[in-house]
Image (cartoon, rainbow, N blue to C red):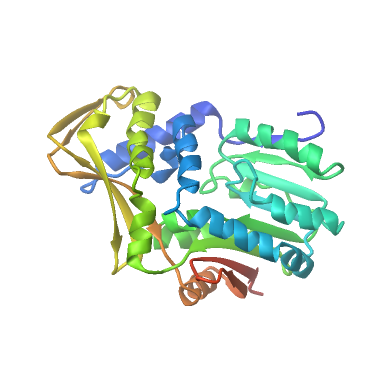
Length: 325
């Protein structure tokens, strides 16, 4: 787009190579798995939008309500010159903070970082109209591989990693990613990190096993996405979705279980996968946090909790953190 640079570090070909490597690793593991980032092809993204509207699924609307309530106070407190957002998508929730920073005349640049060039370009059209004069700089990449390629800061920085994506990562991966995020922060910069909180198990399990089956369709669509991306032949109708809460590890686990023995061919990997009846493919972990576990996690990554924002029910948390000296 004229006037708004977009740095592309992950091409469509590179994305397919990454998918192939991850699927090979997941399908040869003793516990077969597919990574949750594969959920979000076009159909999966549409299904997720439907999930966010379900009465059982509280995270999106709860986080949005928190951001709405705190936007002016947070942006006044932090007063960033620029916002870097990881996994920006359409930047919809972020507009609460962008509105506040733009109105205060302190925010001058927004850097969305996402795997999809199309969605960033689409968002830029609305952002340009909504925030005339604000500099925009897109970065297309995988945040587990390309964070070092974020443009140098041009002033005080606020990094956003909202949603609950941090919960999809295992502890070691979380620490590595937060360590890379820490490198984006100079003294006086901030990170705003979104995370789902530990709560009643019935509430948690209902959010991932909704009554009308949209989450099940979303989970099963990951097999369609792999079929399309890698010319595989998963028989989607022969799998069923189930999510359950693992009390020991404070996480929801989503699995797809085979209804019958399956032989799956993945043409682009020249690979055949045997799946036994009732064997599962693990598709997502969604770890849940408390203020205490969030504080400890941030400390391990060289950051200090500055503020903890939550809703009246304490369903969702936003941690504002600074880099330790």
